[in-house]
Length: 202
Image (tube, rainbow, N blue to C red):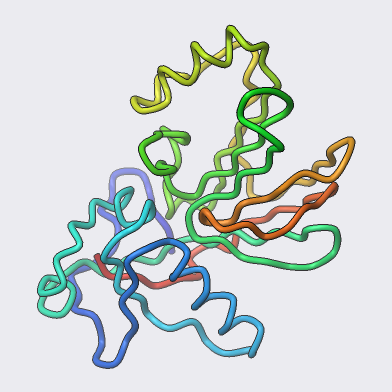
């Protein structure tokens, strides 16, 4: 089960022998996508880098992963992009450009590189943190300055929600990034969380 109020999350645990270790969210996503498409059980994954690792307080210390890290059950995001399913471990970003137009950020992890895009996001709460906005240039620049600290939220013109599933459409297809990797363009996105789907060690 995921996090519960007043209880610690996860348990002490070393990475099982032979388990994969990844240094980025993109690597973790590739493992998940490959296993899902083959119908296989997801392996326990050691996190040695990436935004999910950072959100979970991971240090990238390989010795800790093998000798006494923390075992956590993390959520996964899944998305139908115009009918084709994909997965993401940390975040989904849909936008044509940062400078203008609508920007959709779906966060399982708190961080997207140097930006704290989802300051309330928790990878074990069974929810995805969604920010959806189309700001004017002045407001956009002001929000950018606050992104590293996460203080761009709350904002009266950024719609935020914490959801287990949702669907949205753009006026025309937009590029979609899953864990920082281009997944093509889509007009309609149907997103849901798979709670406690991925076991990780940090």
